[in-house]
Image (cartoon, rainbow, N blue to C red):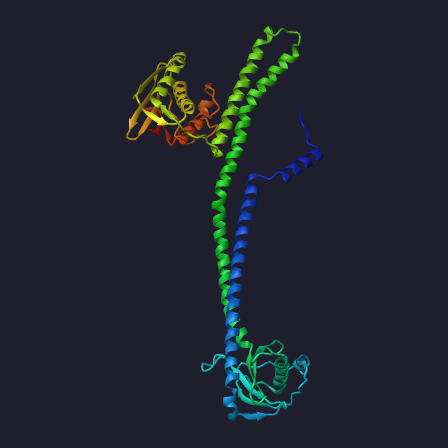
Length: 463
């Protein structure tokens, strides 16, 4: 019977595929967010550093200008006798905003700001009450229009100020000034160009911006590396989760199929007596118990891997426990046609949980009996080695392929020969055994060769 796919079905399938994020897409998105977050943080830090340093440099340069201007106005009276008068008529009620803009006065040049004999270039004047400006020093080369506007602004601010020395900035002319009333009633004023501050700030801002850009590029490359390193555990956990779901679904599918089939058979024969349907009921009960065991094992592993490990407390006589488990499996070994021998050193005690340790030992002994060839022998040995005890469970069955050895303790992992051997199991026993051993501060390992057979070795610290 052939099946066809309608356009609407195809559209729904595409919408589902688009709406469902894949593991690769989720991880790529997580990595992108990691990089963006790191870069945003780095950008904020670098920008803050540049702003703070630039502002500190700006404040320092402004302070240097103000100190130079204050020094100049204090020394103007001493220089007054060496000056040449420069006639400027400045109205007493001049409006600073109009004077500053009228005629578009030019800004001062920068002729002496780079000289070695004076860090901050200044032009100094003595402004008479009549409006006459006496030139004392002219390092800036201010033209008449610029000087007229500047002096008008200074007179306005000096008139409204109660300070002995008035200082400030004329933004429209990019000039800093300091002014002081003299004993004769004149105003001593000194100007400095804002170009000094602008050049100092600009000379520092450019290399800082260049260094910041280089740092951002380096941090971007580092973020790519760190994102791969940070996403690595998440990616492994994601893949383990996906594999866990796939394996669990596979293992649960068989018993569920059997239960559904048995239920269908029972429903098809409602008139039959319960005794006649006993085999279907027993089959359902068996599969239900298998599912219950599988679910319990999965919950146990989830608790172990989620960090919710049970506290290990109490002293356990491991020698008695191993002998008890070995005795318990004697009948199992006999039914499978193998011999089970044990060699246990008495009096070996450890700190731990007897129930979980018994489960771990039982898993290893059952595994040995299961894969020992008929007529062969499985050995269980427990001995002391220094401050630890070593449990070795050995069987002489077929060796485990070398490529399977690193994965034997993975969840749901079973070699192909084990899957087809009809010996059951869900591939969780060894994973649980490893969790129990690690909970007790021990280690577990496996070795398998065609000559020596297979040996599981557990090392646990003595109490």
